[in-house]
Amino acid sequence: MPIFIRNFLRLRKFQVRVGFEFSDSYIQEEGVPQGSVLSVSLFIIKINNILHQLPLFVKGHLYVDDLYISCTGNHISFIERQLQTAIQKIKHWSDFNGFNFSASKSSGVHFCRKRGLHLDPEIEIDGRIIQIENQVRFLGILFDRKLTFLSHVKYLRKRCERALNILKVLSNTSWGADRLSLQRIYRATILSKLDYGSAIYGSARKSVLKKLDPIHHSALRLCSGAFRTSSTSSLYVDCYEPPLEIRRQMLSLHYYLSISSNTSHPCHGFQLRPFLHRLQQAIPSSVPTFFTRMHNLMKDFNLHKVPISPQPSFLPPWKDSEFKYLNPFGSFDKSNTSDTIFQQLFADHRLRFHDFVPIYTDGSKLSSRVSFAVVLPKSVSAFTLLPFCSIFTAEITAVFHALKQILKCPIGKYAIYTDSLSALQALNSLHCKSHPMVFSVLDLYEKLIFLGFSLVFCWVPSHVGIAGNEQADSNAHSATHFSHEPVPVCDLKKYIKSCLQMKWQIHWDQEINNKLHSIKPIIENWSEDVNRKRGTILTRLRIGHTRFTHRHLLLGEPAPTCPHCSCTMSVKHILIECKHFKIHRLRFFNTSSPTLTTMIGRHPHIYLFEFLKITGFYPHI
Image 1 (cartoon, one colour):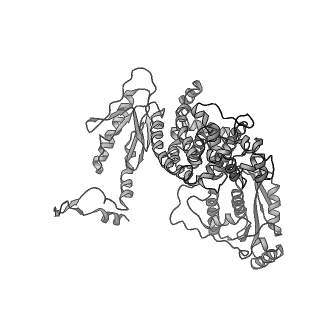
Image 2 (cartoon, helix red, strand yellow):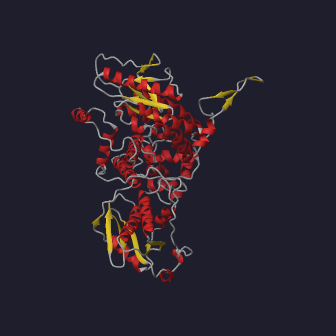
Image 3 (cartoon, helix red, strand yellow):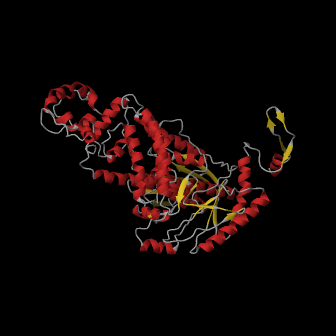
């Protein structure tokens, strides 16, 4: 490989063309071929050593060709000396290695919340003073000197407002695109921008972050066709899109878990400096750091003491596991095959592998209990896991404990039987994002093979009368001993999502006077198979805000009243209360007193739109 790279870079020539005339050929001594597949990789390898030139008190991060260096201190003179020394070392290194840093493209920002007059540092590069800005853009995020992120939020709002024009063109309430397509466009063009960097700018004050909410609300109104006076809480539930605050919390917690599970991450094991911890305790109004915010959220969900399983950060490309498993029942469908046939097949299998010691594993997950069991010929072990774990984690952990039991036994032949086909398939298809316990199982499996053990894995169907599997299932349900196994990030993410969903549901439960709450008390996704016009009408009826009943709020007029009942017009009054339409209800719904749930619930009545047309409200909704 080094010889190939040398030949790839040496004796490269170039010419300059002006019209049809070519200059002489010259040897290019520096740089890499533009557009080559290797150019970026070689550039990264070459420049990666630059971070080793920084002084002790200067920190730096390199993102391809974007270099960031920083220094903290109590005195500006100390910071200035350290940064100037760092730049001189970087300049010397770049001159030696053929790189060139542009002074005009370099900028700095002085992060400080001191009051009164204090000077900015003066730092030079190539004799030119680097401009100290009030804000700097780094990897798409604007960092202002007070770290309020107000400028970034304003910039983000302007970008999203321009992207809203796409939805406005496509969301006509009569002939526009369907809601599902519009929501996909919204997530791709707008929500992705709001998500990017939310873990960073999420530390801004609530008053700053609320400036992004109107973008979210406008997009949901366009997607659903809801009337402009509709409440935001109804928009969230009807579109099944959580508030931005909950979404930011979810994304930030996911990023925090990724840091905690990646031992090679620069922020892994981060500890807040004591003086910052004392400052935040002394001034409760101070904006907490990212890790402080995440620790508080984890504490709210009772996850702050949960051990997190480390995720293997690197999978060698030559890592090819030779793991195989048997499936003698693969050609039989469990739904139409009797238990006796499965028992006979298993008995035949055991005759072929009679010299293998059978070991049965099983996992169990109930509402608040996760456990597993391992059954050997002369012993049984059963343990419980943390309730956040998934059934897959329980099954794969059972296989891991079975291998640990085999390691204590004499070298011989062993057959491991599990009813989890997904666990065996995961062991057979290893990739960099596999479950952490899959890596542990394969490592222990290879160790046992190296020691001389003969191992066979076999899938067996559950609850068909196979004695060993039934015993493992029974012991898994009755396990009492706790196993201190760390929880994988994938399970914690699912649990956090359910906690945030519950938090959203609790807030929705308090909206007892909300018109949509009586129809949709549980927050869930309702799929709709109607055209744009009818989908818009259905949305407005469910939310309770229509053009006919709530247009007066926009025009400053009095609320419309029913000419027959002398009461305020509402969706509920039109559909189920007004006596003038009683005969039409009997005709279309076979009852004079239908409920809102039967008419505009999850499955709206098939004659709803005919009722609206004959009563004359269809074009006014």
